[in-house]
Image (cartoon, rainbow, N blue to C red; front, top):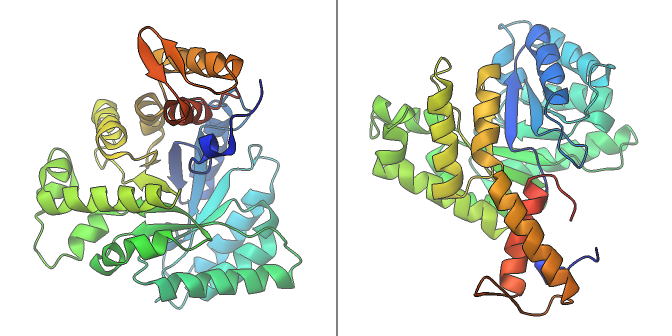
Length: 316
């Protein structure tokens, strides 16, 4: 099938709909195995793995964890090559060392760098510039994308400017940190459902993050479900995040959350079948307007249905 006209492919970059976080060797190896059980028709996993330097190491053992994670990224266990790392925030004395070790030791296989607690464009440009400098020193040519955790009021205030930075690939909502930075203005009940969707300030933050990301063709990523013993709650949270707010990706903090997230965020079999039929008919009509079941379709809807197939990992 021929590719659609260029303006029909203006969609966000393809990333896994589930981002699973791991903080030690045992959990990382388990996550690598889970990745291989969730392969899309395109050959990519539906699950990205983020190794956590920020919260993963006991105090005083940060350097050991850096080298452990670098070894894991470079190991044969990393079959899918979809692994990122969450570093310490810019204000931490560990931030620079995180970048130095991870890029030098594993930069060629590092899919992205997640930056927590960003507050300003200056923070992100500093991280991007330092990352480029370290990568260049070690002959790493491909830029490493940045994922930004929006978890402070300052970050939310600057969210559209943050999304516009070229190195940025995702905007991730850090719900609990965002609430803890509100000075008591948002109650603890908003850290979980149904409060996280009902409280007006949290609701507004989610909308603003999704709007900023999608406006700049970046991926909005939803916060975790804190109730790790209730997969159904995770499914409901992911479904609402995807279908009410436009989030295209969600964090997982427990293996049992991965399947519910994928079921909620990936297109259904019915959506895929409809998209395949419409795209096939559009291609046959050389991307001119068509009518299917009494409904008009043109390049606006072609763009939408093409994105459905890409989200499912299907090449039309």
